[in-house]
Length: 205
Image 1: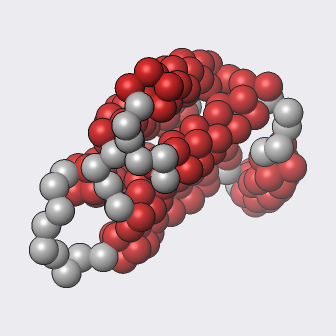
Image 2: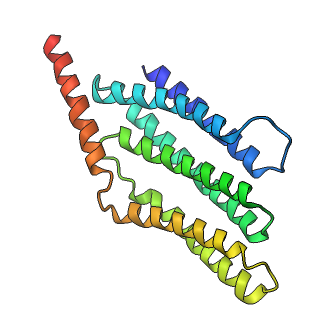
Image 3: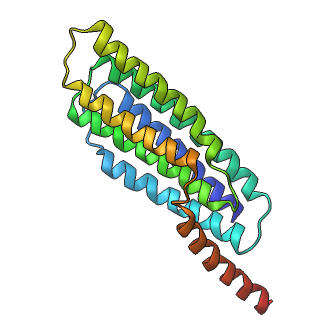
């Protein structure tokens, strides 16, 4: 189960890196749709996530939580790199509406993947993950002010995209850092369900 979960999650993360590279790269004539790619990656991630959850919560695997924690930090590094790359493209204003939606989809997928890894491990603290995201958000705020106040002579319609992306990332980071407990009901449900199955298996043994 350890091999299956780690392999499936690694495949999903490598595929996510490839998808991000395609989205951030120059436009190409391709028949591959981003929605199909996200669904395929979501399937691989779901297999790894469920297998890891069962291995840890039901069978008490002690090695997998360490590996999942490393994967979570690697996912954070990928999200931060993606954020910086998207930030550069937003500043240059060389994108259209469809490309902006791609940026949003890929970033949302990365954040969901990171939160999913967080839910696998019991008592995992997500607060430190918010700090680098908040720093990058602060940099983005400074670039927005510089772009529209000091540079000038730019299209103001791009301001909507800048503010939308900044708002989404800031809200996610602030709620993560504040730890208001939005994920606690979901975590509690997972814990109760898998603890019940774990107890049943031990009873049968």
